[in-house]
Amino acid sequence: MQPMTSKERIHAVLRHQMPDRVPINEFIYSRNLYQEVIGHKPAFYNAEDVMDCAHTLGLDSTIMPIGGFAGIRNFDEGQKRFQDEWMITYQKEEEVSWPGDVPVGFPLKDRADWKNYTMPDIHKQGRLAQIEIAVRKAREYEMAVFGVIRGPFTATWLLFGYEQFSMLLFEDPDLIDDVIAAVTDFFIGGGKMLVEAGVDAVLFADDYGGATGPLMSPAHYRKHVWPQLSRLVTAIHATGAPVIMHSDGDLRKLLPDIAPTGIAGYHPMERKANMDLAQIKRDYGQQLVLIGNVDNQGVLVNGSVDEVIAATKACLRIGAPGGGYILGSDHSVHDDMPNANIFAMIETGKQYGAYPLQL
Figure (cartoon, rainbow, N blue to C red):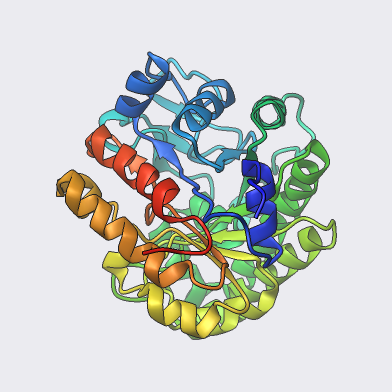
């Protein structure tokens, strides 16, 4: 098989075609990695640094959120505590959560607040500023970039805080439905803008699971979240772009509902949340491209280089046969990891991920 560019490799996998080797994708959240690879630590998550780092590492794809993606700034915020355009108050805790900020104050508590609330304008000037840079750099590097939006569940609870959101599921479920429909409209618009800007896929970030199961009952999920998720995926899929789901946690009870929505891929299959790559491959490998599963809380943090190599090869043995797999961590690479372990995962993917597999 002729060698492919990174962009061609990603596109082939998302179309359920065989690439020349398993592609490698990563969420680059390690400032220590940036320091070693590009010579400085970014002040915020920005396209120039992300794309330069990803290219130098030899990744095939990475991510860039749309402007206004609640929780990850695409600008340098001087204040430690600040309010974003959603009127959500965040606390910067860079040693804990970079590039994310911690939500500490929420604009809504009841229907009266919602009546007086003004949604952000999806067409706000500069919303695509970082996306446009990322797309330009991706073309220059022949890489792929996934544009990121919020999913309906997270975008809604961030307006209330999770405790109040959970109470309202019982006390005023119609309010939850009204808000979740409105934020879905916003991010459908955002997803279409990402496609027009030239991203290779739209990834929605919506964490549905905790360590041992869903964050809400499957019944509540099906009633309140699933209809809007399905609407989001259908609308963006209609543009011709693949849609990828990022959702942490144990999703075993929800995947039977999520897989038929038309999503192309599922990231990150969190190991410590009982997401077994072999089982997911058996159950959903014909429908979904599977992305991730190298343990980012265990071996990538505490393991030796040899242990990282072994763990990466194990993921390749399970996920790669027949195609439909993109290698990466089971969330992101972050500051707690030795850079040597990150390099080992990536180099192992390049060395052992070529088709036909020789593992």
